[in-house]
Amino acid sequence: MKKNIFKTGIFGLAFGAAAAWAAPVELLNVSYDPTRELYRAYNEAFERHWKETTGEDVHVKQSHGGSGKQARAVIDGVPADVVSLALGYDIDAITFTGKKLIPRNWQERLPLNSSPYTSTIVFLVRKGNPKNIKTWEDLVKDGVQVITPNPKTSGGARWNQLAAWGYILERELGDIKKVRDPAYKEEVKAAELVATAYLKKLYAHVPVLDSGARGATTTFVQRKIGDVLLAWENEAILSVAELGEDAFDIVVPPVTILTEPPVSIVDANVAKRGAKIQKLAEEYLKYLYSPEAQKIIAHYGYRPQHPEYADKEDIAKFADARLLKLDDLYRTWRVAQKVHFSDGGLFDQVYAGK
Image (tube, rainbow, N blue to C red; front, side, top):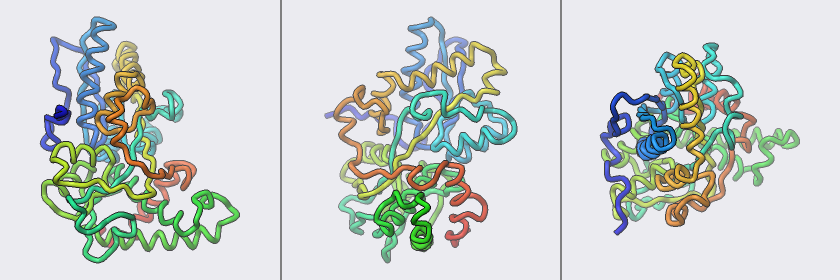
């Protein structure tokens, strides 16, 4: 039997890496909810790599929470050296505060828009799929309870909403390319009305909004609330691995969305600590693209940017679906944030529980 890579458990996890050396240099990575297991393993690998290549001890500390809340914490003064958040807007939010914590060109500093891994959104259902949930339409059927976090605080929840929104637009238009084509302006407006009505129905089926993706997983798995969890693919894979294939099934909707969690140095914070810390923080993020790190990334349920470095059995776990992209819907994350999740945006308009 394959060794359980999640032996430390999905719930009740402590912050920070486990290693401890005498007076090591410390680095703080402020991350989003479902990356606890990934970064625990990656931090150990990086600490070992740094010791072998430089002779220096380093200890990487972690902080986890809803991606939006984590970005707000950094803005409010949490001394993050690096951030690894759920979506580009949350790093943009840190960038555009006026505090000059991160430069505006942050996405150009590392390969692939500073996203060393990707993921997608899937459905986690109870074993046997008793409510026969297969598509986005099935989420709004009578008697179905949907668990998703609060998009005001959770990056995963924002991806959830955009995945549903994009699916309905494509269904109504027949071609997602029409969404940003001015020639189809009136058709797009009509499709957006249908998509807005769908979101209103969807949130009417949501009994509770947790602040982050891990909290939503706890609600669904431990508290046994809901019939379907809108989940990061890695979080669904983790739940099945942790609790057994006899407890849950993963349902992949035919159309979902490509999620691209990015990373960045928090320049102003590392500058205060000197050139040595800046170099360390840079190398910490660059190493995410290394063969060792890409293999770890796949092992913990994220899609590596370089799948050739991963084990085939890990790659085989990933959902086979057509993945919409953010730029199929909006020019930038800042535009998507304004339309959907700003005060008075679509979420506020459709969520009756607010």
